[in-house]
Amino acid sequence: MKPSWLNKKIQLGSCSEMKSLLRDMNLETVCEVASCPNIGECFSRSHATFLILGKQCTRSCSFCNVVKGRPLPPDAEEPARVAMAVKKLALKHVVITSVTRDDLMDGGAGIFADTVRHIRKSTSQVTIELLIPDFKLSLDSLRAVALSGPDIIAHNVETVPSLYRSVRQGSDYRRSLDVLTAIKKISQGLKTKSGIMLGLGEKEAEVITVMADLRAARCDFLSIGQYLAPSKLHYPVKEYVAPEQFAYYKEKGLSMGFSHIESGPYVRSSYMASEYK
Image 1: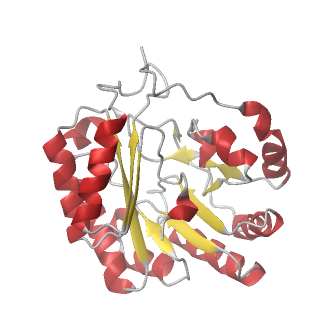
Image 2 (image 1 turned 120 degrees about the vertical axis):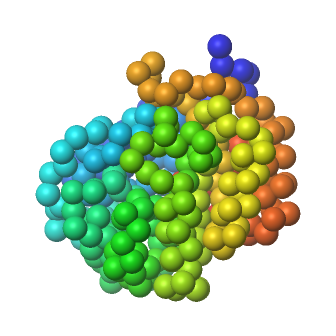
């Protein structure tokens, strides 16, 4: 049984207008593909996290609802369509993410960079946040996205190192930290961000260590949320973490030097993204 603080109702009725616009423009959002519980709240405010580079991921993280499989080739027209949607929705802050594309030489970095450039050409009244995969730590790929003109680059560590083998197959904790470190070296003015889920079986001391590691990588922003299994076939929830514990982690993280932290049961990496400053 879920505890009382996890009783949020998904208001799908408020999503129809946004969904219609996205389908008309042949665009996807991670809000839909990953079954985010905040979709009604965000779509009703015309907020969405665009998912580029297809819906099939080349990795098999056991917590994620994104489809695993062989992706289609990148759509070269997708960046222009995202830019058009950003302008049409009059967004002040946009988040763009993707599946992991290990099948591509650059991991999809070129499409990320093109998307940023198209948005910058179509409107100057928007801050751009990229939530990127690790690109296998390719410095060429990281340089391409970092120098394309985003305001924030996020890369989630997702969980503590001891759980990577069972939760985040195909990824590497140290490599994720190195991604954040490399971005700061490429462009010191860029803000960086990461996220972690709780309730996977992690210990409090491990969470504190992850926060310290992220600060050592000069990460500016952090999101902390409750893991909710998309289905019985996914990695099971080990614990429902109390709101007081989320508040504790936020206080602890701010004392470490993070500029902004969102921490709560329904927090996701893109949730309230415009509030990070």
